[in-house]
Length: 222
Ligand SMILES: [Zn+2]
Image (cartoon, rainbow, N blue to C red; front, side, top):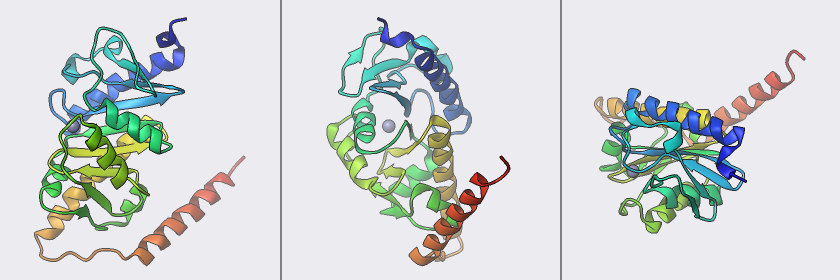
């Protein structure tokens, strides 16, 4: 049976192509930089290496099993395939977005983490760590990213970019946008001097209130 032919996989391929176009439009990557993936059962659908996003077609999307076996389609899976696989293995991620977005890269070159400049950072699990620099595509980078993701759904890779994950591609992508917005906001705040940040207690209060309101929504109109 052709494992690449299910409706779910077809939908994932189409979704990956459309979100790749958004990466360019939203300024989160240029050319073919960055990569995105979706997990479906024991398969990962991931953008290929070296194809500019504006030329990407659904058939170009690569499939790799979660143990790292490529299902050939004539394209080479993203060079960051080891990092995507490691994050799926270590978390409950169903989709991963890796960007080369300018604000997080600028921050990564001079700060050890993105501090709590705005309460929306609770959506990423708290202050976002900057993982040490390791060469792109390496197993060491995969390990560094997984280590710095502990308790977070986002990590910044020093002198490289960022990674976010979510329960689906929409959530992972929204988190990538949020991360870039937070980094930009922090840079703007730095221009005034020494920005105030939120304490752990203040963040915990936000998380508790967010949960309470979501609980209210679930009990809403039947
Ligand atoms: Zn990269």
